[in-house]
Length: 181
Image (cartoon, rainbow, N blue to C red; front, top):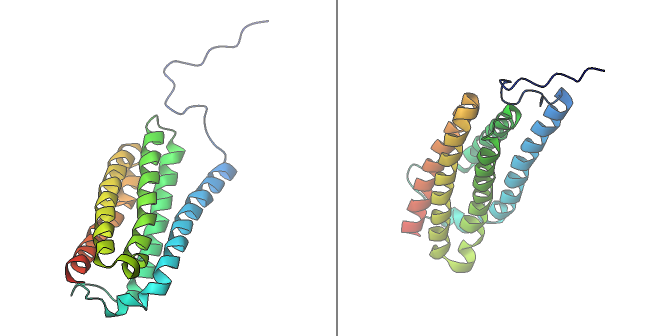
């Protein structure tokens, strides 16, 4: 009986680790579900306050109408999930660190909404400054995520660029609110 030949040392990274279409579809669904969960939980903090204190808040002159936020965030959360999935499926040695950065930014994303909307009625302007600190940390975390995703999957890095742009824009809205309320 002859021994089985050893795998070539020069095998491409991730060789032999291919995941079937079913596993890939489940993974994509899980990434989408994680994004949807963050959005859904954030909606709880927003729904009671968007027509409460926020109606009378001094908003930045460049603030879009409230109806814009839902569609924008839906597109961003979808792009975020697809980007994470693209990194996951590449099997890169750096995928674990990249996805850890993704997880950190997702937690910060989740924390911003209740900090901004739900804490304001409790602690006033201090909540808006705390939210501004969270969104600055979120900006940094998303930037790190883009930098980590890009070399693994260029498409994943590109998918996150509208997200970082929106976070910077949202930071300007948050700063205006903190300075003027």
